[in-house]
Image 1 (spheres, one colour):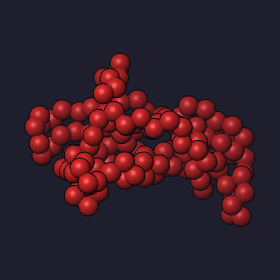
Image 2 (cartoon, helix red, strand yellow):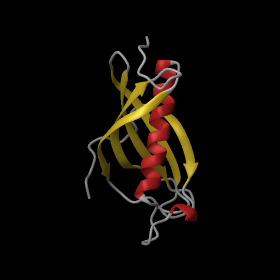
Image 3 (cartoon, rainbow, N blue to C red):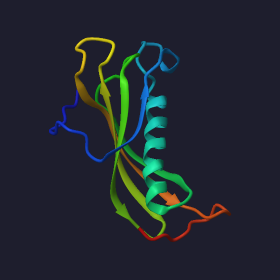
Image 4 (cartoon, one colour):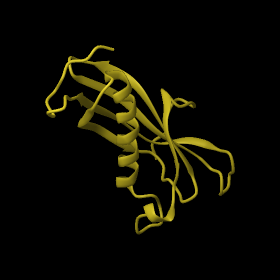
Length: 132
């Protein structure tokens, strides 16, 4: 598996939840689609704060699944601003887990990372300019 060279989450925590049995795939791990969805929500939270309004997801760059997430893991999504344009906002998003119900209890590590690009939109769904 891919190893990261840093030990702490980058960015601010934007979302926390528990991984539940309803989110598992056929192998018993948390489904990649659920992980992507949570990361999209987390990134959108930061993008909305930055643009002070509505945003939509334009693009998800390379999503790297580093380690599986298990049922019972405490899932935390961290987001960090990378770049802004006239209407676009690029955000790095990392998914971290903390083992709280299975061994080794208390261990934290990054499971997934990606870069999301959001676009600020107006009430008609058209791109809008914003100021940070």
